[in-house]
Image (cartoon, rainbow, N blue to C red; front, top):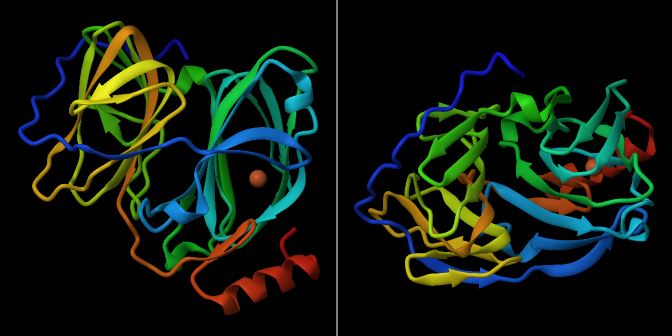
Length: 294
Ligand code: FE2
């Protein structure tokens, strides 16, 4: 969108007590949908630790066979899906009558709420398909809200600049620039960081927010820990810490930085349904079988 102001170059804030890396996570290669190959970076066993985030999948392949089958009709209830395409084209259709085409650099933010049935299908037969899907939980009070979604084309994602750094601000804020999306209960920060060789960046974060960085190009360092490509650095919630500082390696780096306010509510998950109790899960399955999610 050409109405966005030109980003000004802002020096990142100095942090007094940056977070350390608690551990590095490699993720698990798997397939989902009708056979899309992906790496599940944030797996089920990290849901408590990374509350309010439930899942992060990274997909990236030049081989059509790895993605062409897509994700045919399937339901969701009780949380939000955030799909960020780096490259490729994916068409979305849902039972609420929404339809959109997600292309390189764009985001689709969908609030499943009480229920939606949708498909996410590649609209290309060759070339590279790459991106991420993040699942963000909803607080108990919002789990049965009306479904909602927004396609955010690449030109509508605000960018912030620091020396050697471009930040695409998908949610939350960075360098004084407000992101494309804001959420009250979970206050998510979702940044796509592009760092030139050796460039440094710092992001203030409340110590209570759970946070991680996933490197998808090059490598970077966080508080003395090297984070190579295709690794997630889970950031420590050190009491009194004021954010995360990182520095790109000699070849530069691209990474997503994700953080959020934990909900501290029970998590009951059965596949694409994420509620607070098993009874609510049984209800979701029953509603889906009875056609009440459409
Ligand atoms: Fe889905």
